[in-house]
Image (tube, rainbow, N blue to C red):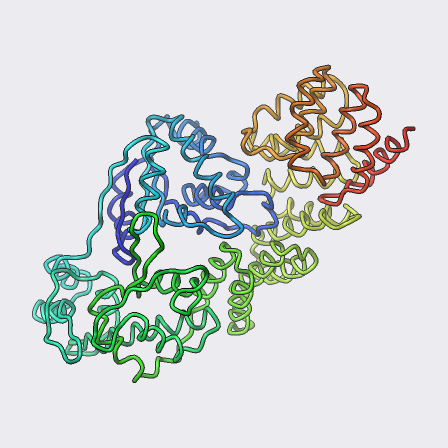
Length: 600
């Protein structure tokens, strides 16, 4: 394992994308823990967001269904040992922004730790694998500890800021500044000016500041005022952060100056607290770091400390209270990106506000932007448990994509609404089946949609039709974990020995760490059907512990106890199954469980 670390804004992503990965053949694309979600969340309700994002960004050309239910080890097998991608090759993989893997997020801590455990296990299974983690400097200790637990001592490299010579090369070649102008510009960037104190020069140039100055589009004779360009840059970034967090721009500008620059021009350091830092929400501090206005340091496992990103910003920041930051708002793309980031952090209020702001600012003809914003609103409603509201947003987004003739996008949204309709209490599966069949027509051969269609047919009591749909999914992708798990559960329901043996074969092919309580209960039922009662009870115990209010789990447990001869326990579990709500039993199983409860 190799770790690349740097302060925020040093150019890690650019180095990897433009300098490192293009030098290798048969290498995965650059992974990212939070940027890989391309499907409505309701289509993958039980998926680990970290895993799905990283795997999807490693293989962006693959359909999202290819990744569902896949472990990192499973990805390695399919990507590096598969006939689809040429001869076997050693896995070369990289994860950018890996600090997100080492930052605790309320509501996703279990997903984060499970993905790191899965990643470490995959690396131990593949001694030929090479992983490059790109992290911010303050997360280096956590990254090193992970590496030591997974594979041993890593190699670590620091990406420093630019030397004066390197900065001159950048400005002269890609930016196109004449050499004398470039020298004056870089001279200005490395000169720290503070009101009331003598000027002094630094040895290196901050890449994000160089970019801010060079992209200001100065008029001839190409002699930009560096102080003016930096002040406009800081003002614009503060305005974007303020808009994204419901703040007034003048307020955040005053707070920023007071917090990070003393009246004497000395840069100040503030410590992160529980929820708020220096009177401001920690989410705002993280946004300022993402925009390279502040940087962080840590001593050991102590709290995160924030300071101004570069001393060269002192004088522009000193004059911010005297300036009115430009009344600019984020672009639609920035607003959508911020909404998705808030959604990942389970900050549903911010995600909804940002998505609604994009909708309000977009015109009637901007159909795709409006559809993406509507999908985010649907995702937020889904995570909040508002099923009907999520369906409404998804339907509206689908109608916009229908006008664009985006059949794949419409198909994914129909799959999401179909899956949500299966969650309705006392649902009528016919509506869900109609949506899923429409989705399958738009994306023929998508194994995930066929699998969910199979579940809908099963809920409608059409077990044979359900098996046919899942068999079709596996005909397209014989290794899809979700399809194997679903077919295993359906086969276990049939209750005969031959089907039970086939169910166990399917369930054995699904990674144990990715199993669900319903599949654990199905395994127990299949074991009991084949006469392995003790093994059935061992399989049933964790399934009941995790799925204690799941109708299908409780009903399968009742059937296990009936087969084992414990009629008292079977009746008690059947009664719980009838009353269960997460999820409730489909109607055909409710009738069967009622008969068992009444001991008929």
